[in-house]
Image 1 (tube, rainbow, N blue to C red):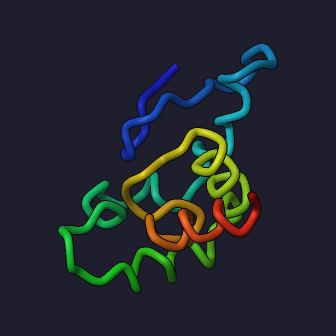
Image 2 (cartoon, one colour; image 1 turned 180 degrees about the horizontal axis):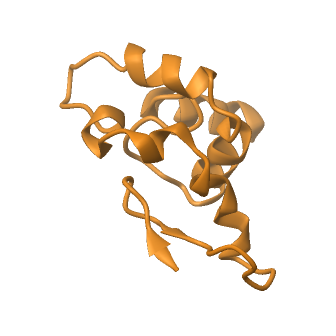
Length: 93
């Protein structure tokens, strides 16, 4: 088990299936190669660069699903900002 740059637990290779295995996408996520501040900008700062990086990431869909399932309220997850995820949640309801 390890902690990635966005402060969440990741499963180690060969780990048993379960909640930790659901986070395996984080091991190859592009956000793991950058600083957490990049995805958690100061209020009013641009999220454009983080979203562009997310757009090129193989784990984007899994990241967004994780953020929605776990009600992540801060930062860019799966290429969407806090407001965009809130809007998506409301539209799903």
